[in-house]
Amino acid sequence: MPEYFAALTIVLLLGMVLTRALLMRRRGIEVMKFGKIDKTDFLIPPFALFYFYLVFANTFDWPTPSAQEFFRSGLIPWVGVFFCLAGLSLLAWSLVSFGQSFRVGIDAEHPDKLITDGVFAFSRNPIYVAFGFILAGQFLVFSNWLLLVYMVAGVWLFHRQVLREEDFLKKHYGQEYLKYCSRVRRYL
Image 1 (cartoon, rainbow, N blue to C red):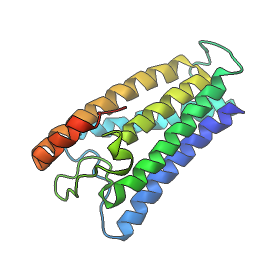
Image 2 (image 1 turned 90 degrees about the vertical axis):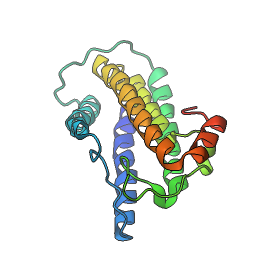
Image 3 (image 1 turned 180 degrees about the vertical axis):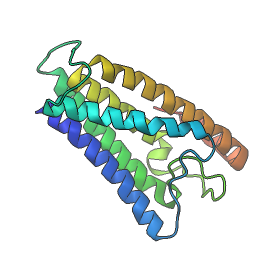
């Protein structure tokens, strides 16, 4: 049963982000800025699609490169479900808090106002924290070494993107952003 929640998490995550992007596009706001600054970002989607396949393969007994598990437990997968639910909740709160400023990637041409309220009063990067919770949760559900590799790589990629975004935000918002950084943590 926990594996179905892990697969549903991916569907809901993609659904939330794509729905938000489509709603904003109807208002004339281009949300997808992914890969505009660093073209190597286009290497990420094939790996993300393979990750999605791994989760669904482990859920529905499709062929997978490795079915080796680190541990078998009745409780730990439910802890993973909790992490997935926490990640989805945090993602939803982040999307609401972002308002019209939500972008996938850095929008250097049309940056909106600096968001410091809602969930952003507690974390400067709640969406990345949400993704981290989801990756950790799915690893706990399946305990597969490939999902562990994805979790570690994902956290590294999120941190890399956060550093890029922080550099842009410092340049664009200056002192306002530095004051925000002094009172709100980067992650948790």
